[in-house]
Image 1: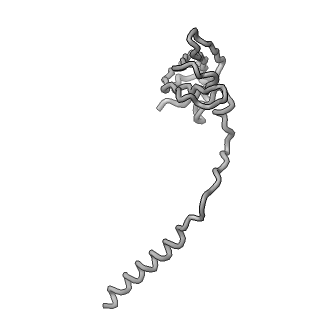
Image 2: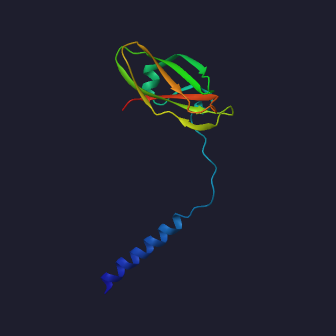
Image 3: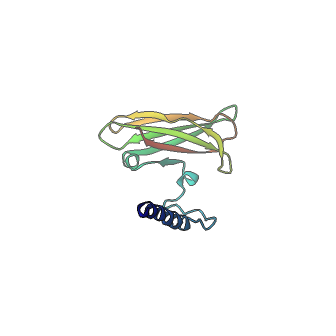
Length: 139
């Protein structure tokens, strides 16, 4: 009889202690990021440390097509003495910097030693006035 009572009491004590410590005390403010919001201010952002070391942008050309869509050509340069594979995409934004819902899929770009390659992105509608190009290491 005593053996059955001890585990039940231990279980009840654990449940009471666990419930009292998991009480949430209400709404919280969002945490500040440790890095600035570069995607809101810069035309190109590098998403991981490997790409930051290996890749640079030597130029961005903007062109508005006849139908009002925005066409962006970015020149990506390999800074290393080895072949690298990166992925790049473009998020198109309106004049206020809010995304228009127009985001291109990531394109794989293979860069040989110290090479520069051009990648072209075209918006799907004429709402795009700004953009952010994002680059990451290909997996």
